[in-house]
Image 1 (cartoon, helix red, strand yellow):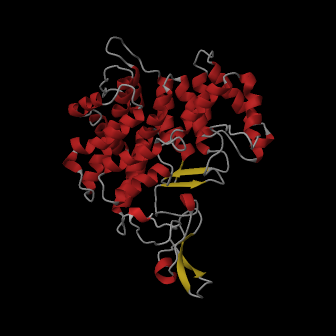
Image 2: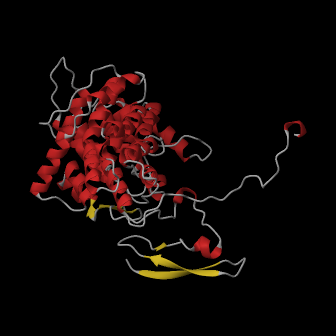
Length: 430
């Protein structure tokens, strides 16, 4: 990482300071503003952190202009085609692709950790039956520290690893149990003979009273979606995990905070919003009317699942998952009007100059919502599946932050715009 400097001058005082210019492997240069306040007495202001690097990281890189996504330097297209989710988990956490021996050991470890403590299973009875599964996820994942407190020394590499293994392994079990609780069915225990994605689907849809066979195309689609959602640089939930973890909170508490941030409809709830939009449109014949509304600046209606905050080109994940969406839809009965609306809307958006000029391409949320709907996964579980996939990204980002020798507790500053200092008046004088 090479260094140069940038000169910043305070025109009001004439003072100036030389700030280091940092260069990473890829991406824009970054100005280290650590001395801006001590030397010039000023802060920077960047609402939403649109131009601020909050950390140094070697995990994930995004080039939004070119539509590039790299995990540890590997293009997402290669990993999606040749790898699987647990191998990607190993890559993200340990930094390198595993050997056959390392992979087998890792998969075995995750498999053996997939059950949850029976006391934790009884914890579910305290939640109302109508509770949103994401609300249960926030509570149960936060409670893991009360059941697995034997490995919470955050500076102990072995404790970090054990907690990581437990989170990767147990999140599908916790998620499926959240769904079962919401529909009044008994929790289904994990099966060690099933692969990761298939095991999750079995816990979701099997019942004690009947046999259930996992559809291999469904398992393939889930594994692919997990790969595509595994990490995505310093997004809102990942930044939340890092900020919570910077206070030296244990990893279970930090990941619970991340789940809470993910729950927001502007973040992990976007694919749920896609389905709600398709439900509103209802009929493919209504698409032109709704597209016209989306183009009308005076209309509050928005087409969900198009464009991306970071990607100003086609979301590389969307290109990958689009193919899987069509493969999956080819196996369905083809009589779902909502899926027909989705495909017609995609077709129009890819041809309409309004969308092309603004680069409003269908994104990963558009296709993931369609896939989950086609598999019979209820809408309120969409964000839960996102949380399962993103767990490896969160725990890897947490470990990187904790292992940073220069780590400090996160403490953003502010531009205060409230009342000036004033004196207290007794109530009878107000």
